[in-house]
Amino acid sequence: MAQNFRRITAVNIGTSAVDFPDGSNFPSGYHTLIGIRICNTSASTVNVSAYINNGSANIYIQKSPTTIAPGAALELI
Image (cartoon, rainbow, N blue to C red):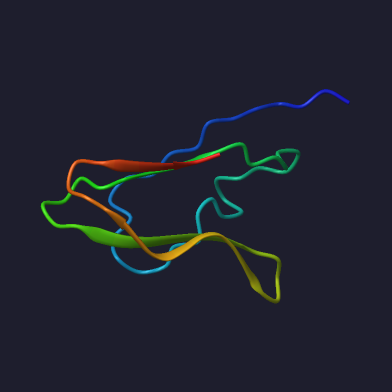
């Protein structure tokens, strides 16, 4: 079965949990998550977590306290 790939990006996410991509920017037919890159564009170190919610629980890909220094990035594949 062929798979259509799409790159989805966001800026200025902030410091609280965000549903991204959500139903409005994750169209039907796209079901594979290949990677996540989290970039820190602020002047301070930030703590991050990345998870997928299956409707009843959070399944963590990376759990805080993972820190990202100013100007650095974390890539989860």
